[in-house]
Every structure is written in C-alpha cells, then in structure tokens.
Length: 225
Image (spheres, helix red, strand yellow):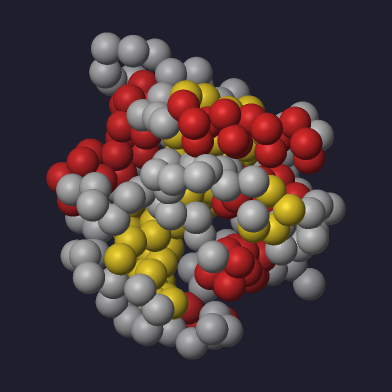
C-alpha cells in the first residue's frame, strides 16, 4: 500500500499492483509535488500519467487540484488496480486507459495506427515513470510525440523518472530540461516546451538543492503573491 501525500485526499491509502510496476516512493512523490507546487502548475491542470501503474502520481495531482487526469498503462492488472483506486477515492476527474504509452502518445501527436482518446485541451502536466529497462530510443519517441505542437500547453511541465544509471533522456526539438534532482537510485528530470526556457536556466545535469532557487524557475512560473 502507498498513500496520497497531501491535498483533498491527503493520507488516503491506495493499492499497488502485486508485481510488474515500480511505484514512486512517498518521499520522491512528495519532493516532486513540492516543486510542482512551487512552479504553480497543479491547480486546474490537465494531467497525463504515462506508465501509470497504480496511478499514484496522477491521483496525487488530482488531490492537489488538477481538473482532469488520465492514467495510461498497458498492463491490465495495473490498469485494474488504478481503476479500483479511482473508484475507492471517488475522483470523477480521473480516468484510466489500458494502452501502451507509446501508442497513446503517438495518437496524441496524430500518428500511429490507433486513435487514443485525446484530452479536450493541451496538457499542462505529464508524468513519465517508465520501467528502468525501457530503451532510450522508445522513450525518445514518446517525448517527441509529446513535443508535437498542440499536445502541450505553452507553460506545461513534463516530469520523467529514470534510474541514475541510465542516460539523460534524449530531449527532442521543442522540449528542454530545466532541472534534475536525484533521490537514491532515482533521477527526476523536469522539462518544458523549449520556447519557455530562459538562457540562464540551470543545466539539466546540475544537482539543484531541494528548495528551488528563484533564478532557477523559468519566467511565467513564479507563484503569484
């Protein structure tokens, strides 16, 4: 079992698949959402959680004010657990799709043989927590599809979790990393549509402290007030 860290559903527990997934730890999830809160990206966001597993990341986003969340996982047992979590938590704004992340992203980009259901507007936040053994070429293809014009909002954030032993993702044209943070064996990358990246943004291979310094936050993302 794992739990929702904060928000309207804070403290509620959710089920995780018995095998085949690698849930994001509560500690890492709390750190990710602390940064996303600082970036003011959660309230009213349209969120896509690829390789969702139990749906913990997407459900955390829903708890913290996201307006629409789509959980995508190709493994039926994982998708069934995610649907159970959605039903138990009674979160109407969350839906679950049993599909590969690759096909779903390709359909969002207007490519591929199958049409995945597309959200009603551009995405504000995307999580990718693929298996560590996912090859870098496949991950790069998914990121390329997400970078297709119209898929992401201009001020969107893309969060990618990888092993610290794997290379940094191959960021496509139209998507650029602006931060990286390591937690034990996990590296978390933050990226955005590249037109919003300032020239003084921190390098993607930097190791920023837990608190995001004001000059590391891209323009337009500073919290109001």
